[in-house]
Amino acid sequence: LGDMGLQALPSVVLHMEALEYLNLDGNNLKGLPPHFTRLQSLTEISLASNPIVALPPVLGTLSHLQSLHFDRTLLRSPPTEILDRGLTMILAFLRRLYDAQASGVMNLAGLQLDNLVAGEVWTTQIVTSTVTKLNFKSNNLTTWPAFMCERVGPQVVSLALAANRLGSLPLTFGNLVGLTKLNI
Image (tube, rainbow, N blue to C red; front, side, top):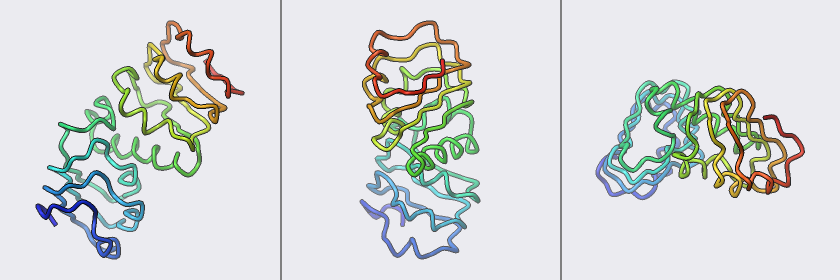
């Protein structure tokens, strides 16, 4: 299905549950449909030359995936520090994003994240209206950016930042009025 100018994945592909290889290079895809989870036999997928700025969290559900091709040029999520650690870490990160859509718990603990400031774009994927709990414990964060205080809405009741290297918190941290549990 490469170089066809597709703006969406044809729904018939989602019924090909035995599919192991899928080439979607050179299209106009910006994401993948939620039912992409049906393609559990995929071992290799190529999304190169598509205007994708965030790898779809649904990719994290593909337990047999061994090879994922994409362009890093436009990509803003996952963050570079996750991308640089290879496919296993990318899929683990995406799986956490995917699980949070259903559970409301965004668990990014222990991912060795260093810099949320550089992640201003990708953090829009983790702080959504359905997320009620954020866990950033045991990373390497040295700051909690002011923009995160603006993104975290009143629906977020729990925030864990323990075991990081935070030197201080921005004044806007006081705007997190929905919190009932704070672990710093």
